Length: 347
Image (cartoon, rainbow, N blue to C red; front, side, top):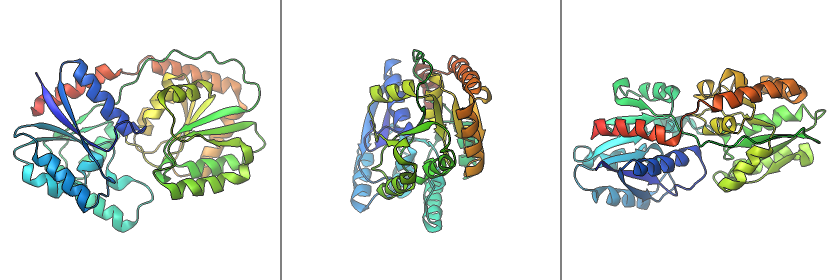
């Protein structure tokens, strides 16, 4: 029986794309016969304190010689000194959702430190798994040989297409993203501030607890928009599906994405999309399913939103494109087989 250990930084039920990828891959690997142990590393990753690093070191030291270890990059990128003594006896595979130094809102010093730490850590990995060709390019730029990188895109779940009757009242824009600078909520709110003459409301789904300062800033920025902006926080899977089903348009103004799983979730629900072209989003969003705008710019985002809010025919055409794209999306079992093949090569 094939076996491995997944090192997960924190609670794998955290509703982000990275944690969803980890959790669904573990479950799918088990379904195809792999014995997968999950080792949780508690801590404030990717900035653990000394006690949290010591705890991670103890967990890693306890792993048996020869263990195939799949380590989530949120922790692995900061564990170079911890991993180094075990680089030869354990078979390390780094699962890099996106390089840590590409997070938005970092100081120059913090960015340089994260880049140095992760570059050092990746030297100890026998192989890397990334979710997109764009992220493969990012990690290759850090000195990793392309021969040691495998792209395994996230899977999706088949979703019954919701029947959306003609909307009475404001069109519902949906953004699913944690309230952090990288997700671009401030750009979205600035763009919508210039579209008060149109009938819309914005529903934001995502944690406000990961970065409370950013969450508070966004609420202040949204205040002049009045009761048009809703903050739902983290929601369970059933509630999230309900938000997708109730929406008319999905929007994401991110400054960087290693893949952008919420885009494929929106496609699976047949939603037209307005998104930035940041990172992997340029490849994640099919051209016929949405409007794409330059990352970090308010004016083009505002134009795209005005266009899709004003043109019912455009929304219908892009929705049809989303439904067509959804038929081509890979499932989690299919993607787990790709990951299994990559792990078998290391094993």
